[in-house]
Image 1 (cartoon, one colour):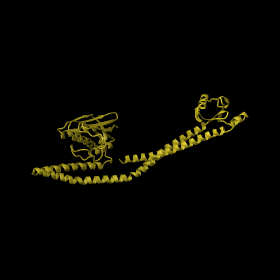
Image 2 (cartoon, rainbow, N blue to C red):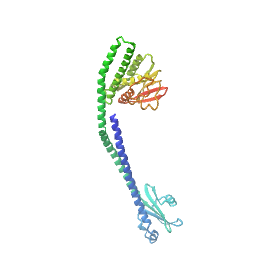
Image 3 (cartoon, rainbow, N blue to C red):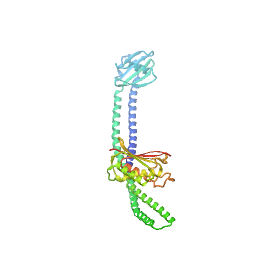
Length: 389
C-alpha cells in the first residue's frame, strides 16, 4: 500500500515539475522563434524603405544582396524589374500579391522563404528572403529542447521518487505502529475470549432455566462473533507483509471449500463448475479465506441457489461467486471494500464490515483484482481475476 502511495507521489512530483519545465521550454522556443522572425522581417522592411526605384534606374540594384530577392511592379501589375531565383513558383507569388497579407512564409524545394509586399507611389514592391538557415536553427533548437525535456524527465522522476520516499516515512511509521497495536491487541484478546467461550460450553451442560439458556446462547453467539472479529483484525494487521507462497492446487482448494459449505449448510444449494488441474503460486490459507468471505456473504444475502465457477482464459484465471439475492446498489458498490463498511444489514445479519476488505487485500497480494456486477433485487456476481504467469 505504501509503495503505491510512493509511486503516486512520485508521479505527482515529477508530473508537476515536468509540466513547469515544458511550459518554460515552450516559452524559450516561442520567444526565440518570434525574435528570429522579427529580425528577418525588419531586414526586409529596412530594404523596402529605400528609394529602390530610383537606385535601380541608376543601375544600383546590387545593394540588395542574396538571399534577398525582389520584384517591382507598375500600377498595372506589369513587372518592371525583378531579381528572383530561377526555381521560384510564380503562382505562389501572384496569389500572395493579390492577397491583403503583408507577410507570408512559403516553402518549396525544401527551402523556406519570407515574402513581404508594400505599395509604392509608382506600383508594388515584393521582397523575398531565403530564411532556410533560420528555420534550420529553430529545428535544431527544438531537438535540443526535446533532449533537455527527456533528460530532465529522467532526473525529475528519480528525484521525485527519493522525495516521495522521504514523504512516506512518517506514514510508514504510523502504519507500523497501528499494525503492531492491532496485532498485539488481537493476540491479547484471543486468550480471554477462548476462556470465555470454553466456560460457556461448560455452562451449557448445566441445568438452566429457559431464560438463562437464552441468555447463554446470546453470550455464546456474541463471543463467537468477537473471536471472528479478532481473527479478521489479526489478518488485517499482517496486510502488506510478505507471506510464504507455494504451488497451490486452486481447483482442489475451491472444490473442498465448496463441499465444506455444502455440508455445513445442507439446506442450501451450491452449484460448482470447476475446471480441473488449475494451479498457481499462493498462500493456501489466504485463498481459502478469500473464497470463504464470498460464500458466507452469498449465503447471508441470498436464499436461492449459489453458483461457484473456476475457469481459465488465455490471460487469467477467473473465480466467480454468483448469488440471486438482494443485490447491491450502484452507489454502494465502490464502498463495500472499505473497512467496516456494512451498508444496510437490518434484515440480513450484522457482520463486521471487514470481510470484503480482507478479500481484496488477499487478492492484491496474489496479483489479482476483484470485479462486481450487481443489480438490486436480482443478485450479485463477484469475479476474482488471477493472472496466469
